[in-house]
Amino acid sequence: MQTDPPLVPADDLIGNSQPNASGPRAPRPQPRRATARFMLSHPLHILSLGFGSGLSPIAPGTVGTLFAWASFAVLSRYLTVVEWGVLIVVGFFAGIAICGFTAKKLGTEDPSPVVWDEIIAFWLVLLMVTPVTLTGQIWAFIVFRFFDMVKPPPIGYFDRRLKGGFGIMFDDLVAAFFTLLVVALWRMSV
Image 1 (cartoon, helix red, strand yellow):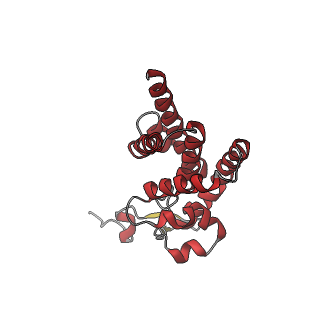
Image 2: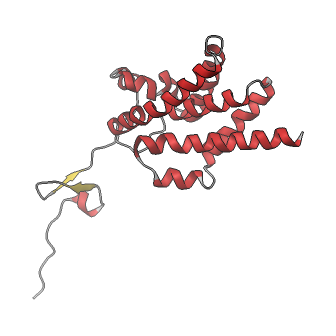
Image 3: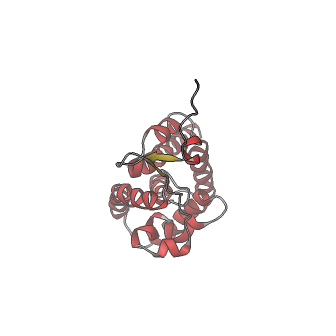
């Protein structure tokens, strides 16, 4: 005699659930959408979303990098190289917690509206290539965006393996390193 399989919730059939401490599976929380209201709900969201630049519906990472470029131009009038270095180091380590916090609230591991990682990484690129012409800055922007979007090895490896705030921050730091490597090789060749 054949018996029917036990009835299970539809979410279990499509894998849209996670174990619950009490035994049955609870539905996975749906990721939240980053909005201006969400950003203004906590000061850390303002930073992680790049003061609103990450809310761009098109290419938030690119818009965040453009924000980094513009803010670098403005802040360079007031900050020395040493102060920039301190800001970038503190911004990286604080970014681990800041980006991790916002990612958790949004319900995804590496949400595209979180652009603090692009900001810190591109500030590092600009600091290291300065002084450079506007054309040089444009090329640094293009090369950085290439490495950040395409994520060739080993950037893609780190992006897949490292999770949480550290993973969000680290892959962009590696993209900055490769950008600086390309710039250095280009400078040596001319």
